[in-house]
Length: 251
Ligand code: SF4
Image (tube, rainbow, N blue to C red):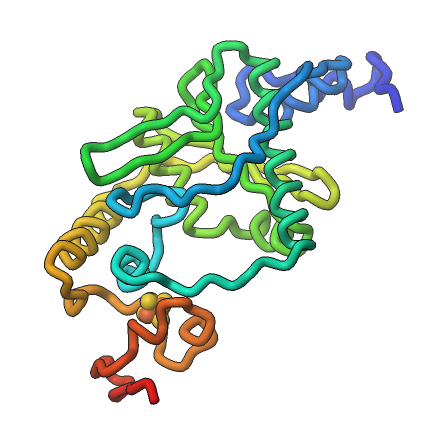
């Protein structure tokens, strides 16, 4: 369907002047017949990030004990169903497509910009627009998309706020895309005090160095669904007295 230039919708699409939002700019670009040309989808094998560093993409808001065991033992991994692998790869396609659209709209934008903070943190930011505002793209199935657009996942909010802090801007954009319908919704995430995030990572780093997790917080209740699903549960629980949970021993 072509959008008539005289229609209110067209005018609305064009009205992006003062908005922080990126979706109206993408819609305007597409409505004007914009194309991003040839772009690359990264389908290289996934390599886990250095375990000596913390990564906002996977380590923010995560149970301190899980971060400890992820760095000290070989955690079991479940073989992935091939259907799930295809779905994950579809997410990579959406990622690349949205990055390419933003780059076409804003040639000053930087894509997949790496950063490091001392020896503690390493990360990569999906997009830093020409104005310095970061965009964190999260693709999700319809089911998760509906959940996230009602209430963004706290880890995603923290990750975006972290990147905004790295970019030294007041806010960042968290953009969800529905892999089943291509719907998009974005949230403006203000920077926040990240001292608790840093304190938690430093605690884990100290525990790893001293091979002693006793001061680390538990992230779930003993016997809960989360506990049963956690790949680190047997190390986390074995032989320990867990406050209010009793002693657990692996038979
Ligand atoms: S079982 Fe719970 S407390 Fe232990 S590492 Fe996993 S999430 Fe953390």
